[in-house]
Amino acid sequence: MEHTTSLTQFIIEEQRRIPGATGDFTSLLNDVLTSCKKIACAVNRGPLIGLQGSADTENVQGETQKKLDIITNDIMVQSLEWTGHLAGMASEEMEELLPIPEAYPKGKYLILFDPLDGSSNIDINVSVGTIFSILRAPEGCENPTLEDFLQPGTEQVCAGYTIYGPTTMMVFTSGHGVNGFTLDRNIGEFVLTHPNLTIPEDTEEFAINMSNQRFWEAPVKRYIDECLAGSEGPRGKDFNMRWVAAMVAEVHRILMRGGIFMYPMDEKMRARGLTGKLRLMYEANPMSFIVEQAGGASSTGRERIMEIAPQGLHQRVPVILGSKNEVERVVSYHAEA
Ligand code: AHG
Ligand code: MN
Ligand code: MN
Image (cartoon, rainbow, N blue to C red; front, side):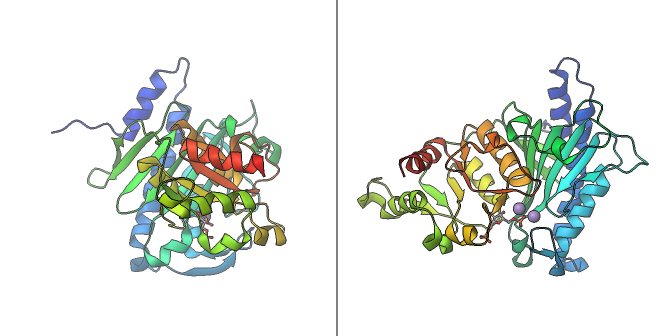
């Protein structure tokens, strides 16, 4: 039988390379992957067990929640609250941060997550995902405050996502590159299938919601216009376009074959008092950590996303990430404007 490396083995071996590591982080990551396996099951069985459709409730962002938004959030909370590795949690689907219940021991980490990313894809059977970001809690902290969570992305200990597509995959970084694992349902384990993922520096593929074109700012308009002009335009080459409407799927594609993903600031959002579409703490920061670790770049167009000093748990930011040379080009167009 061919030898394979499971995610569990991979993280234990990674731990052995860190002098003084207690195994706490390894254990936390194991609990996260267990919760993602449970979510994979729920997402997979969907309509068979009545899990499609709207829950007719709204989250703190004023978005209508899908039944699976709530169920996957519950799965994350229930799988992680008892473990003793966390001091607190925060989620897209919970207005306030969630302290660990009195009954359980407190740990030294904080986790933030988007339990189901791209949830509008659920009812049409297209890829969705889970995104997580792990931070260190302040020394000896048992009851974390909001300030304890509001650390810049550069402070992340680990970031990852699971994509529930034709196969279920987990991709993560703890600051030593990016590795991808595929869920082998026969043995119930994630197996290392995509070691040392890197993003090509150049690309001919962009992802942006074109229906917002008339609301974009000038630098983004210029960049996309030049891509669309193709081989006859200033870029001198043709571009391809994709839009899955799930950031997890867009980032995954970029890790597999390069590309640039943008959810930029626009006039429509500005008019509604929004500072972007995607959320800094549990979408933009973890994805930026992964992308940078794979050799890509991530910016709002004006600053590196991971250096933003967060103002709130649900803060929104413009996101431009992916192949380095393309992201740098968009950033330079912002600087020139
Ligand atoms: P969520 O389902 O967690 O609210 O996130 C959806 C996000 C993101 O994943 C995706 O890139 C974007 O919203 C899609 O936006 P449009 O509906 O404008 O295409
Ligand atoms: Mn999301
Ligand atoms: Mn979500």
